[in-house]
Length: 328
Image 1: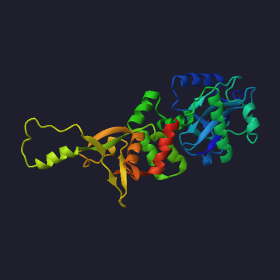
Image 2 (image 1 turned 180 degrees about the vertical axis):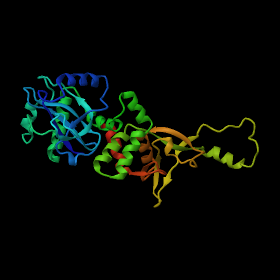
Image 3 (image 1 turned 90 degrees about the vertical axis):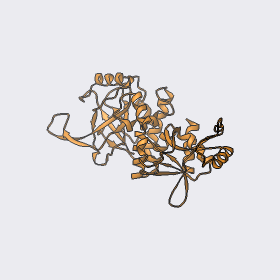
Image 4 (image 1 turned 45 degrees about the vertical axis):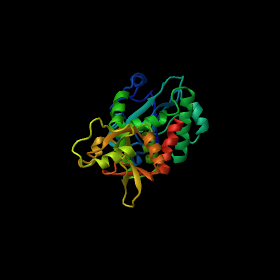
């Protein structure tokens, strides 16, 4: 995930301060624009999910007025200046927008002291910055916004997650996406296709707040099982007989090709094969509870969707989920 600096001069651009104020008002209501794009200079390298900050430049109140990520690769269209040239643009998912007035949360005067390698008052729009500067800049933006009470410690990661439901306009709809396992499926797919640390951490962060489906077996007490074994050939149970109170539900442990035992978790019911588990009970459980139960059972791993594009999570990786949950 790379970081690009977009630049906006409100004195010359077709996006005006009044447009920005309207955008902020909509954002406060949980409404994000479905169609919003900006011109990008370093367009060849830009990819979906790369981040951006939008700098206000050319004024006496320069600074960062927007932060978000790109929806996809760039496309070519006529220049917004209508000068006969063609530019490359990228659609954006806006995470947050800030005042363009003089009382600015992320002022250029603060950042230019810490990041003199960046031009805070002019330059091309859509410039990719180096990886070291990117990490330090994102960290400093978070610190300032948390210090000023605009973000909390989890906001940055929350925006990363919400980006996978970019078409969702409100919190309730996002919760529905989470409930149905759609975002979790997408994150799992992205990590399986091209595994790297960033994608894994996104997946684990989302898992810590997720509920999944676990196939469970009914386990009888030792006395009840002995009784059933003795009367297995009987047509009717004796009058007054009933099972005891020691019935429990235990997960249907699965094994991999090497004989490793894994705790099964399904992102949603669609991931269950038609011929699987007709005798199971299906229970929705938090992933944190699953990790804790798997550790008690001394299992080697957890496995997401074991029969449809399975993803194994060794216990040392699952432990990270517990650490995230404990610190959130």
